[in-house]
Image (cartoon, rainbow, N blue to C red):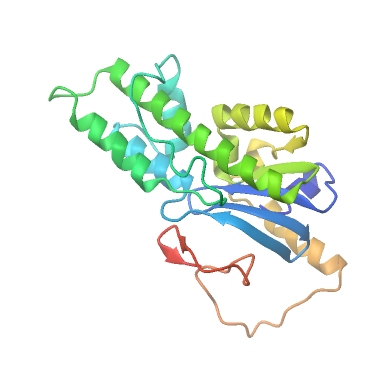
Length: 233
């Protein structure tokens, strides 16, 4: 994900990466192949995971991001007063667990029975608006720290139309270039794995096959520990 834009748009280093998916929510400065500095990470849920859980609560399909976006069309994003997690904080971290819980409380406060179509649309619109505000605020904080020329948004959530519109607006405000890979390269795919290998091979980087497998391999091993999607990283 961190290097896909160099396959599609030949982006020069360095650039700021917003990595948003079912398992990731990070802001990193990408200085080169294998050279990453983490500016922020989620302190609990990843954004894609939060979308999946909200979609389940609303009785929508999987994956949650596209399902919520479809349901939210025409919804009133101002109907439910949901929180904007971490907004205004001086760091660049994210948090989505409390937002997800607030939506569940909003559902519980509605009259008993099946959710009406309008309720689902308004809840979905309110939730994705809150996520958009959080992503924009946290990314703006990172932009002003890193001062890049280019912002790359990658990962499965990068295919979310509403969130991409919000980030496009942010890029225009900050006067930088925004790049998002084509939707087919936003989700997990073999092309990005092959490209990352080619980038390393071109630089003479190779690894023996005796390394120890790890469920999570942090891009920035020197970053301060933080709760990351439920795992210390």
